[in-house]
Structure formats: structure tokens, C-alpha cells
Amino acid sequence: MNGLQLGAAGAAFAIAFAAVQVLLVRFARFALDHPNERSSHASPVPRTGGLAVLAGTAAALFAGGAELWLPLALALGLAALSFADDLKPLPAGARLAAHLAAAAIVVWYYLAPIYLWQAALLVVGVAWLTNLYNFMDGSDGLAGGMSVIGFGAYALAAGASPLATVSLCIAAAAGAFLVFNFHPARIFLGDVGSIPLGFLAGALGLVGWRGDAWPLWFPLLVFAPFIADATVTLARRAARGERVWQAHREHYYQRLVRSRLGHRGTAALAYVAMGLCAAAALWRLPPA
Image (cartoon, rainbow, N blue to C red; front, top):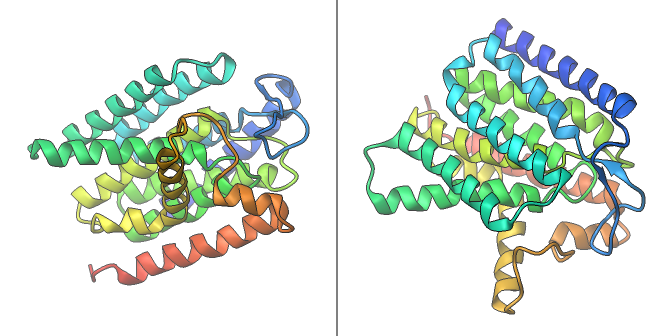
């Protein structure tokens, strides 16, 4: 990493930190997440924190990250759709179609020509990461911590490239958000934050693979804690014939929150798992 990248990360943190404060002071009652029988919180909390993370991430565009305009633009488009969904729920089919379309554009732009079956698998994979990030955003500090560790690992692996700049800015902006999201959370990511972050985890993973920054298994190992929990839980629900797209409280992290660990203990345990997976992924990278 170079001084410009570190400066961009500092700017990303500062912008996101200031943006969260503005959201909490000026828009505290806007887009509230009211608790229900599936929630892990007891009182209404704003779900606009993703706007602050996106604002901080924009710092990458002015520090050499503009080369990755396409995934960033698509993430912004998904954020707009998700923000509308946060305000008034949209049909699940429409949201999934948008996720698949964004994933298909990234696969086509960066990987064509490619066999159709390979493209289909990668599109489904990116769309699944987009959605599972949303599924896993249900405990204080969890998704924010995964963003800091996961995108931080991307930045370390990508060196001094534009990919590293963008990843570092995402991690820094998520770190600023995490200050306010750690238990007891004062603000949530909302779909406007979790959906773009999940998409970028998959899209930038493909960009790094295409650019020989890492093998295809690297993003999967870095984000393994989220992928494993969401995938196993979904598979179990599908096997029982349940509606997998409906909200529930069956994820393993949700069970840990309901145990004696609570939000803080669950976050601490998750950070250890995330850190170990990221460290293992970085350690197993082939020499540059």
C-alpha cells in the first residue's frame, strides 16, 4: 500500500463517521427498523447506516479507484433499489432479478468470453453473496466487522492496485460505521448497506481473480463465516420445505445471540472466525 491509498482510507473513515452522525442527528426517525418476533433488537433503530458506508467508499474514486467504476456504479444502483425497499418493501422477485442482472453485467464485462455454464455459476455465486450478506446482517457489529476484515484482506492481497484502494476504502468506511453499530447499536446498515456490500464482496472477488491478484477460492475463504452460516441455514430450511426467502431466526449467529453470549460475545467470536479465515486465505496465496 502507498501513501495515497492510506490517505484515501483516512478520508473514507472520516466521511463515513461524519455521515453517520448526520444521519443520527438529522434523520434519526427516518427509515426505522421496528422490532418484531424475528428481530434481535428491542427498540426501533435507524437502518440508514449503509448510506454512510457508501459515502465513505466514494473516496476511492478520487484516489485511483475510478478504474473500478462499473462495480461501484452497480453497487450504487442496488443501493438505490434497496433504499426504496427499506422504505416500502418491494417484491422479492424484482429484487432478485436486479441482483442477478448486476452480477451478470460484472461477469460479462470482466470475464467474457466465457463458457455459458461457467458464467451462470459465477452469476449465481455473486447474487448469492449479495443476498447472504443481507441475511447475515442481523446482529450488532456482525456485518460491519465482516466488511472491515473481509475487504481489508482484499486490500492486503491486491497490493498497490486500484482494487486495493477501493477495498481499503470500503473497509475504512465500514470501520467508521462499526463505531456506532457495535452493541448496543445506534444505527443499522439496512438493505441499502448490506446488499451493496455483499455485491461488492462477490464482484471485487471476481475482479481480483481476473487480474491474477488471487485464485477463485480466495474470496470464498475470506468470507467463509458468512457463506457457511447462510448456506447451511438455507439448505436446512429448504430441506424442510420452508419458504427460504422469509425472515427467520435460525441462523447460527442468531442462536448465539439468544444464548448467554449475546450480541457482544457473538461479535467477538465471529471476529475471531473471520480473522482466522482471512489470515488463512492470505497465508495460502501463491507468491506474487
